Image (cartoon, rainbow, N blue to C red; front, side, top):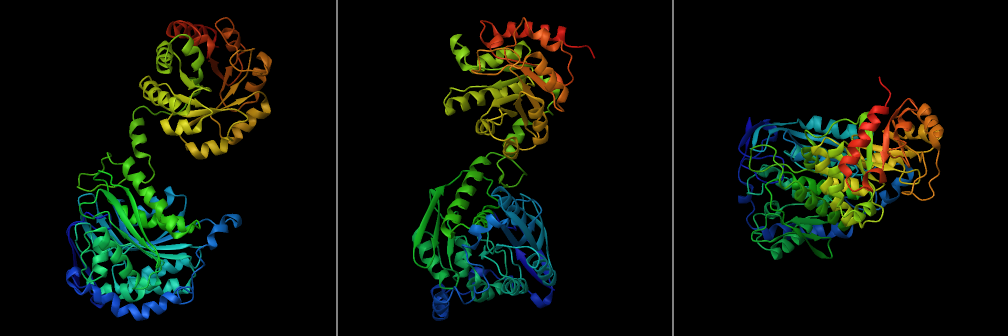
Length: 575
């Protein structure tokens, strides 16, 4: 039995820290340091140069002849084909890198991702506690299972731990047509530690890279591929990209995230004709585990959608930067290199812990709807008005600010969200789904002419509250079909807060309540004198009243809210 020793890793790869795993003798992997092999880096590319130059001129017909044209998927949306990436890589039980990072990246970018697992690791933020290599025969079985059934657009590779694994991959992508092959050569960590044996290098250089549409080495992996070439500057990266291109891939992206003394994260892209330096902010965070896998998977996802190579790289690079910045302060695990948040949701979830609860019809009992004109009249900020309303007994708040600039509206909403949550009161946004998403409000209320409910739900997710305005039983039924949580029914009485609003009266309100399968809140012209008559219609599903001027066009919002709450409670039917 042979052994491969994998030393400490801080790279966004698939193995980290000290681990020893055993393989069958037939595929023994040399544990010698890869960086010690082929020291004459400049000779490697030149030895292959003549053969590869011929390959370059025949790329569209030679090794890539089984490929679907790169632009073919641009019309796939019209025939219902879902963009599909197949990742062939190792499993990271800590879910920071490897297969798990690939799945999350593709999901975040709206692409289906299937998987072929080449190795299973017991891994966390501290390191790797064990590795189990999947037999090559079963790697081949996984590949054929997916490729023979599903319309895979792009194959992306990560950890390929043996010569045999590379061979079965090459055989399968020759047998089954694909759009592109992206090779992330997971061989070396950010700290320079070896992740693959030197025995895989010849097949990488001679067979895998010539089949690749893009290869994405970091600077240490580029050095390994080039036999120990030193990369310390962007100029070195440019030379390396050209030299790796001479090994056969259609495109090369040398990643400079580990480049010494670089203020920005600079990557170098070479397509055979033009060199591009792609810069982004360097995010100060420990949570970088999985960035290499994520970048390559993001590129694969965008290619699967039909984008050109350079555009796919730029979008994926921006995606990684955004995700790193969003999750720079989260803490998962106790080790030196944590995962980041591909879906940009964990911090919002953390903020909602302890405050989030399921929507209840009782939340609609006293529904306060803000008005910036009234607040300005009385010299109040939105935050002050909302605080007074919830202190007085409002059970739900809707920010309805039609005339505010977007930036001002967002800032006000961001102040009101934690305020309402501290009182256990849901906060909704009127119409503006973008504001609701940006401030992580509890939901939105939309009208009949606003964004369709199905679209709102797809944007906000299943846990958010969505209300819709309805004037008749037909609209109420459709709201239930479309997945609303409640109905706002009115105007019950004439009102000055909404121009040209047709009134439906108490009879119209009762008709909607009788037909509705959802809780109903009455709105429109409701005040201290008629609120009791609304509650006394004793209609099923009537959960409360929504008011604007009754609360906010007064000198003391808090005391007025208390009085209205008491009046509603007195008039509400006893159960």
